Length: 262
Image (cartoon, rainbow, N blue to C red; front, side, top):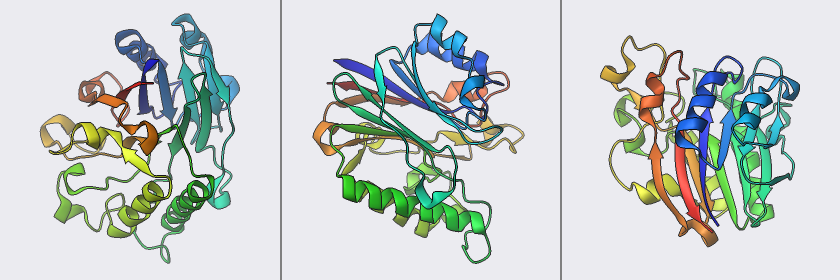
């Protein structure tokens, strides 16, 4: 069963419901995973999704911040969530397709501005969250699984606009990259985006602070699609929809897509 998965940090699904609707109409992924929905489950604009054929929704929400949702045209089963680092945040939810593939949708903590856990509680929470992910996947040994989301780390030198200038900036520091690599190793995850696009600068996020984000092009690849090794070879057609960052009142993230023949 071939299917396409997309992941997008929407930065308020209610504020940008029309953008989600546009993406679903124009690109029609079979599964769309959203992060930073910023609303409780009962406030999700489900009528918009249902009208477009996305009748299956698995979500976890909070008022005003965090929140993750999986929208699907294919039947899915809710298979729970994990509260890594016991933060009490809606940052993970998982669903299983009828073909047995489990999709994990993550919103990893951003980590604040100072890359020092002694000076910045949020940075420590981020590292602890990643450690929790590592330990869980090491224990669970996932198979036939896809992991997507805003992982808030750009791991490779060509995942940022300037490796040298961002080495001490949260999202690209060596300690974060090491923690993310540990998560990847613990679950035998394969970075599908980089499997398909192995070289070259690649970004999925551009700051709101830039007067002209497109011209400045100081981006980072914070949004990811991974798959376990047993199905990684079925992944293909990876792409990042950069033009979406230029839509009216956009999220600062662009959607990331991949297809799987399973």
